[in-house]
Amino acid sequence: MPESFIITSAESGIRLDHFLVRRYPDVSRNALAGLIRAGEIRINDHQVKAGYRLHENDCLAVSFPEKRSAVLLAQPIDFKILYEDIDLLVINKPPGLVVHPGDGNREGTLVNGLLYHCQTLPGSDPVRPGIVHRLDKDTSGIMLVAKTDIALKKLSDSFKNRQISKTYHAVLLREPSRKTGRLVAPIGRHPVHRKKMAIRHENGRYAATNWQVQQVWPGFSFVEIDLETGRTHQIRVHMASVGCPVAGDRLYGGRINANLGLSIERQLLHASSLRFPHPVTGELRTFSAPLPEDMRQVLSTLNQRNA
Image 1 (cartoon, rainbow, N blue to C red):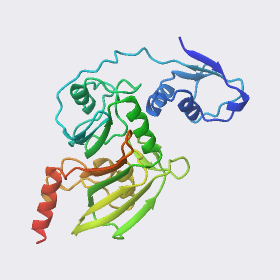
Image 2 (image 1 turned 60 degrees about the vertical axis):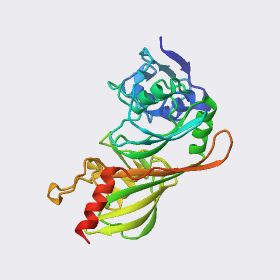
Image 3 (image 1 turned 45 degrees about the vertical axis):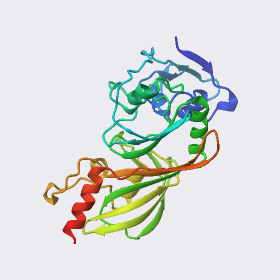
């Protein structure tokens, strides 16, 4: 049965999606957006959009689909553990590995491997236990995983409060106009291509990216990137916006011409280091993950060609 309630005067004027995020803090924004699009969330028995502004006395009905079994298969998955204690894991995610299960894909993910290693993980989201942040499938590198409820909450709070420093390295097409730079531009869902993010000045979320060029070759550059925020596809969107997409990133214009003879099968983006306060001891910890073989090979090839 749907859960129904009447909007009060104090709630009038709030966007539907914002209201739902507050009302259901344990449900992800993406899941709530999917329910709105599917017509499972209705106002006065009518399907509305996420941006609908609530009115006093609106009748809001929310129908959550019947949950599938929350039990995920524990599977041996190849990833390197850089550090582990009773509260958390620090891992090096290989490229090509999906972080958590999604629709039609409940096996072969990092979460399946984490359950194999840890047996149990904390959190109310059955497909994202222990996950406090994520990397795209084809982005490699360092990730934090919580092993207890306390660690999950404190690490999540640390990310929200920007107490965690993240450094990435990337091979870009072309070279930014400045050796060092800072880009502040809000990011939101692309208005047409729903799998993409874009710079959205009207309704995007604040995002800031810093870069420093490390090396340059004709048509390519190698950069170090520090994130002040952690928006979806942030580096990929921001660097593409300055004319320097991540090499191999087909979604944002980084497709590589086959005639260049470079073996690039994914976006060459790697999460190199992470600095954070331990969720229990408060001790400031720093960990790093070396560049994966495919990125090292591309750098070696570019250096050899331009020796």
